[in-house]
Image (cartoon, rainbow, N blue to C red; front, side, top):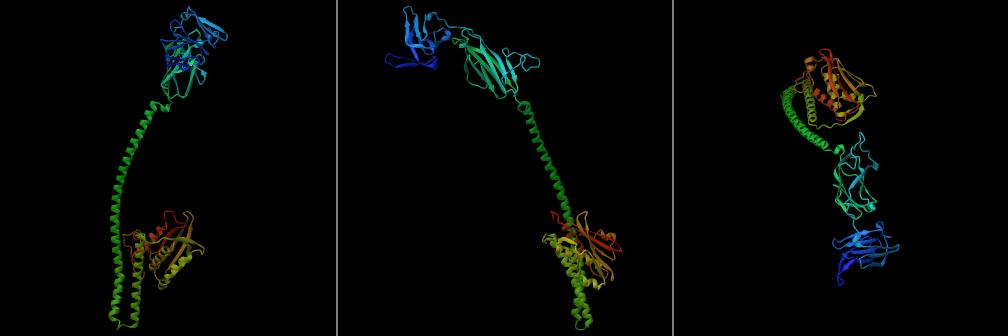
Length: 506
């Protein structure tokens, strides 16, 4: 429907969006008060020219039906209006029709959780006040689906009552419904506070704008509560402060330990330097003897060789050989010890036959043993195997057996034996001599770098003690250990063990 000026210009257009019950207009007539009456396929409507609003009448208001015939209308001189329909006609005086101006009260009539009615006023119940009287209800976070029903008190055509509702805090606009749907359901609202509001109108569209409201409090789960958050924040702050203070304390302790360690290492370094200085002083002193003997013999040979007998020259040559051999052995041990200390000596352990290896080492010393008429016995099973670096093992056996010969009188005996030790999965090697033995005082100094342990052999052979230091370093390189059992005048037993397999750290 639209209104036009005399020249055909459209002023306003009205349809169901403006309040008409149907867009198919059958007849239009103006009453004496300038209000427009319209018949359509949705009943009869009155358009108030002042308020620009429609008042609709339907079959429920007493009409013969909701559908009317096209252009079937009449207005009498007395102002009575007729509209013809398919089931008869309707006639009325417009001024005699009065609107229902009763403002209907509205109530919340029911409340359900998960589509189940809630018990009110029962002892121990969550809800002590009936829903139509309550001003506030409190729900926990598990009660996530709840429904409200509502009703307006208007008995004049109550089926034409209208309703609007809104959950303030969740919705921003009103929701409209009619008498056929007087309920609403909400699901999964966030914890917080809300206000549920309902308004209603009577059959003539007179609204109760005040309506009814209900405050709803949804409690959060315990892990989302303010007290829990405060506890968590306090705990986190405490942990951070504790961690920071612990870190500071740890750093202070580390600093103190580092300072102590630096002080200890400084003292150890000083002691080591002093030990090395003393050690090299000892080595230099021990080198001086054979070198002086060698220089003295060469000087005699140089000055008197033309007048010397053949036997004298042979004796001097043998003395030169002995001095040169002693010097060579000392320098070889010193060089190997130096390379080991600098980490420049290769370490390549491999498996070998123990008896054959020791026999090869002793063969080199056979001339020396023969000279002193010392018997050397090897008491090792033919099938026994060891796992060690060839060069280092040779050096250990050579030094220990050489020392045993050196400190054993003429006609004595030296034996080399070995056995398996199941307790620590190793091989234990023993070098036993019938020599002069070792005093307890000297035994405590044997493997110390800064102590002079050198003494002459039974035939005046020189000794520096460097060979035993080298043996100790080589054995410990393999993850083993070396020790001595001896008594003065009875003889000595030098023992060392070697693991059957190298530890991972070696």
